[in-house]
Image 1 (spheres, protein in one colour):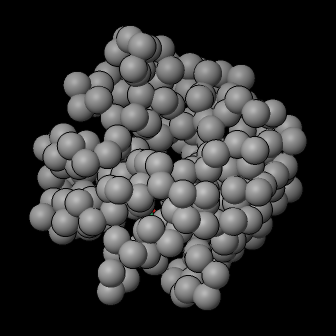
Image 2: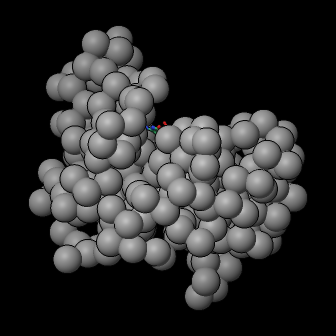
Length: 233
Ligand code: C5P
């Protein structure tokens, strides 16, 4: 069976907090996620510092014209992130431009991951934006488009992991937020699943934030999730 790893979301407003979490969870996590909150507050220094602990998943969710997205990807190449996210809804040309820009870094280029449909959007809010058919159908449509255009993987909710694997096969990375260990609080995640369920369904990475970073003992919380996924990275 495919190996599923733990990515811990370091959603902190400052680098001191994020680095303390990074130090605690690094033995149990394969990736550390730096999102817009930390990146906009601390800039590239945050990526460099966090990358000293584990490879960085740089979650910028880029969405602009292809030339601008390519430039943004090029701008972060010196930070050597392991992955960078873009919105698949930006279209095939934008995804392809991001991939070409990433390839300028050579063999250890960042992987380009396409965000499909944000988990905060349900069928009603998607319909307001002109998207009919509901989230699962839209995730499958955008997932196929993004992978065909050069995305190395996709970000999706727990419910779309199995259908995306069935549609796209083994190659793409499937990165899944909204994962909660059995018995822990859902926070504001509407649709959750356990790490074990996601490993079984074919996820490549589960992304877990608050159940680890807000735990009394973040290292122990990360260790328990890594164990549920089959052991340390
Ligand atoms: O704290 P929690 O485990 O809910 O954090 C999940 C992380 O995954 C956050 O960084 C959040 O921004 C991110 N994410 C998400 N849903 C998406 C895409 C990203 O929860 N659709």
